[in-house]
Image (tube, rainbow over all chains, first blue to last red; front, side, top):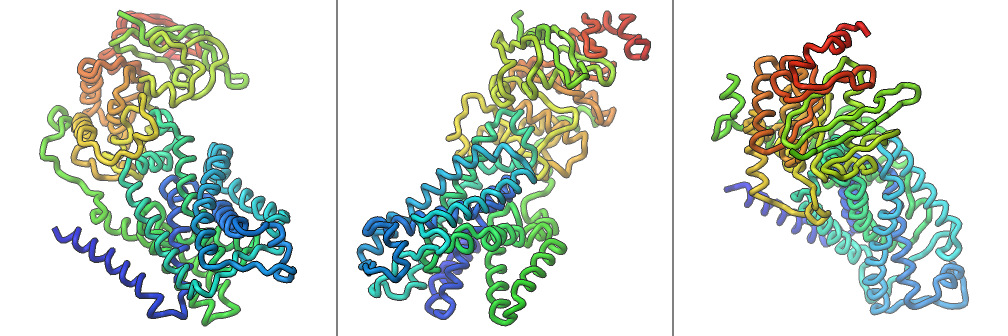
Length: 354
Length: 247
């Protein structure tokens, strides 16, 4: 029984490295915090895109809703949101938040963002999850763009000039470190929830939808409800991630941060594909590789970073269409449990038909 | 003997093509009933109409005295009426055992059931049924890697896993190795007897259907051409003409 111990040791090592990293590499704290959030992006995208086969380019909708909702609650608990946003840093009032107010705002804002994102997923899912394949993908692309435009025109949340989440009080200490640990906790929670979810019949149901939705329906599965539920779960965690990301970046631009279909929206898909769609660890590995490559090219190939990213996409699609985990699963299927097992009892068909 | 399925005056057109024209037929509980007819005679359309894949233009369909022609596919399946497909449909990237485990009856099942983890009783049933169709050794292989014939057997086992009251099979022996066909027939008969599943079978292989069915309906050009016990249908002049193209 070496495997369970090895697994436990692996988890423990990741936990320890995660806890020690910000202390050892404090210069990279915000990039590492972003990495934990990217893991959440990739994991939640894969729940619907990988395990269920519904490629969504619109998951940024839930990210943005969580981001704005959290910031609006953080401000709204203590000040008028529209006056706050209209001040744009130059008003007569100075908006300050003491430590208690800041933490209270976050404690209420994050769950509110999560719940609103989940509700949005339930409503939108009912409307668009009836579509399949490419139609669903294109439709979600439209949803992301539409959401960005709505936020871009909505004065209450700052419209095109964006919104600044509350300024953290000095008593909070190192902001990046604070959000690093919150992001890490969220990534671990998301991972554990999905790990559990993938042991239940729910995974079998969404895999069945991926493999043959008509068959699943003809066997009595209420496919639309299951699909909506999967999207709601993804949106819930993405909503929290949005709340954290907005506060980490300290500025919410409607199109470049919140409903950033061209960056976060595409990266989610890339990370999941790079690591291996439809696996638990694939999105985690994909997010890690992606963030490291992205940050290195940003540092050492400045000006060419988008080209490098483009090349990475080409390499992934050409050489690893199944992703890193998918590549190994294809090479060593037996390691993943796909093998012939000679039965303890004989098959009856062989008895009768020879 | 009570009636399991009753189809009355069902018509279905696709644009100008009248695939089914006022078809009426009955399947008694516990029987094995056959449906034959030349290619394009409307057999599969009738199956799809019964299980709710598309709405019918006219007529009524009753399953256990309940009108089902307005219900959706999943709702009809939940009543215990399951079909298999001519072009086999299985979940290719899942293992055989997973294919079985997700095929359990959804009757009265709520969404909460989806969050169950293990159910040893269900796993045993799945393994037993895989052994029943001769796929036990391959239970941990991806279903998509099986041969066509094996996939057909897997689909049959999945249907049984659903514990249907009535099973509609679309060409269960097509594409299956001739030596295995007898095995399939045995299993169909056994399922009918042991699990008390009423069977309604589309089949092109005359030997198979004559051997199995107790009553046969024959369609041609979307209309019901003949019905009766196998011997009578086999010797019916109109049936022979339809198959030989004298129509």
